[in-house]
Image (cartoon, rainbow, N blue to C red; front, top):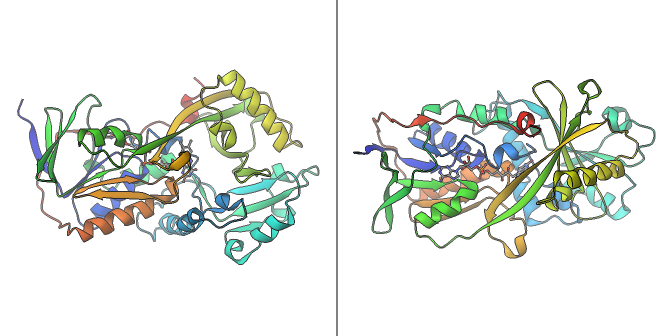
Length: 399
Ligand SMILES: Cc1cc2nc3c(=O)[nH]c(=O)nc-3n(C[C@H](O)[C@H](O)[C@H](O)COP(=O)(O)OP(=O)(O)OC[C@H]3O[C@@H](n4cnc5c(N)ncnc54)[C@H](O)[C@@H]3O)c2cc1C
């Protein structure tokens, strides 16, 4: 079979949040950018995420403003501008699940941590919530701890994907997973990518935003670096057996004495309107490979410990195992910021957080501009199928 030969300015591989954000930016800037996906849009980490647009407060629980806290600090404002239609990409159609992520401690916090949270550096990012403004769950007379409101919205990720995929959807294409990738070089510069026997796409630049899939793509390029790390999780999902006695919607980190939240809960509705608590944090980090019977027993105990005043309804449980894919760090720690590494005209990019997608796009665009990317005219009919958006967990996890 003779492959169709098409051309573009930039080919981006992987349609999670990183690829979609960058794809929007480049096309808006007048470049022709094609986004390739070999599954469904968002299916991997992005649709597994809790949708919290972190501003870094949870990384300051050890009382230190780390590099990570500073790098991510600008992100909520960047996203807020997009949500208001005044930012880099148009997110005006996005459903905001909560304007603020909350953070509560069951007991009084140490005076050292209290004064750190009240310090100039953090006071703009987190405020205590007066009793009269607390959500119902935290109005209970037996809740004696502290409740903070963070400057971090929580978004419905399916609606984020829909907004990002819409403007240039004819340039987001799906190719089958079993098609091998071949690269055509001229010296060290990549001229084109070949997908199976079917399609050759010529471009000035190639950006890899394929999350966990980057490792395999680097192998097809014969690149030994950068190394990737996987940090596995088993997230916990629960919902009331009786939807008339549904869980309350909360978006909150529970603080213990350690430097990480004990649990992070976001809330999502299934098709019948029943609220699902999607629980991350330590329980998910330590939960991989545990059978759901064990994980749910541990989660139920944990919920009773962190909100002893709340009587849980009878619950249904599910687990969701997923890997976070990131540039390799010593001792499997979390990277500090979005990562971009350029090897000639191939750019390897992991956002490391959904919230950092704007930062990742900035970094890639800076690199492409430095390498003199030029908009060219491309009159091509592309025969690949359009990619479709993946499914959320809220209806599939309990099946
Ligand atoms: C459980 C969980 C909760 C999280 N919660 C949050 C949160 O609340 N806030 C936050 O800021 N961050 C959060 N994160 C992190 C965040 O989700 C990720 O950093 C981000 O989604 C990564 O986006 P990505 O586009 O790089 O990768 P992905 O979303 O993994 O997308 C990669 C895409 O590439 C495609 N692909 C792979 N191989 C190929 C190939 N060969 N060809 C074509 N396409 C390919 C995949 O199918 C996929 O669509 C969370 C992560 C997890 C796992």
